[in-house]
Length: 104
Length: 262
Image (cartoon, rainbow over all chains, first blue to last red; front, top):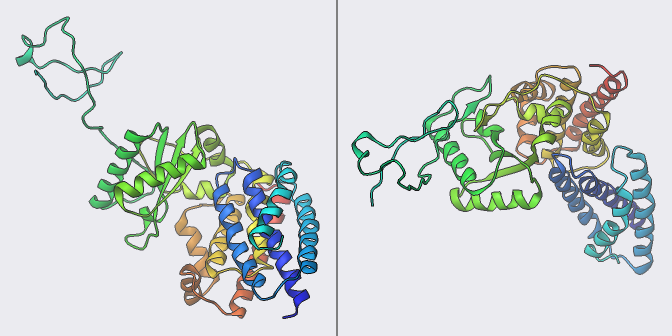
């Protein structure tokens, strides 16, 4: 699979994983918040598989960050059932996940 | 030291302990005594349709209730899930605790102590009592989870059902994602069951786990059912087949929410 396609897939999986994680934090009164945090972990594991397919240079890393920010913001906007706190949490969670994947 | 053991009995205004007749000269009116709890009397309550458990399981539950009561300040304790319905093929023992302070630290503390004491696999969820009452009305998964339970106190599950769109949409996030992304097969199993539960809730149908599993068994053939239940690898055409079922279910659910069917 090409690097660009992998990059798109990686950003897509990370977006979904972070949306679940942010949802579990923002809607923490949900009975199943912990379960959704686990959903996030499962998707992040899939993202990690894609991550390991390529060697990412600084340009790629910047591009992934950009894609992730843009897509996640859009997804969170669409998910109006998630508490508004979601936007306060977003940047911190993006940084954490990028650092974990050595993309920052 | 003079001592005796008695069971606390119910009084009209206060619960009471009587001094035995043969000790009336040893412990007299105005003497000062100390009362200490030696053994907690544990009773438990079965939900309506749940069959009686084996003696071993009942004793284990009694011990778990007793241990939790001694160590934590709890409102009510519930055992739910496959431990109650499956003879041997249950994954873990699901415990729901209601308490004033319910958070992940509390769950972790209860989990660690239970593991240390019983050396068994537990899964613990804690919830604030008031929030729990609300969830029993609005949450399909909670309603389904409590179709069978054993508790340390009597509990009537409200038949009232409220459709809260935000909550249902929160529950639909993962099934929608699975239409696009590929995760392990157990994720498909769990989310298909989730969709069946939500649809049944919106249609005001029975939410027992047996009914939900029964519908899933009807939708997918036995071999595939067993594979996804056991989180085994499945082929691409099976994933597509499961996604098609999910798409159909999502359409039905969206239309039921839109029409506000009650």
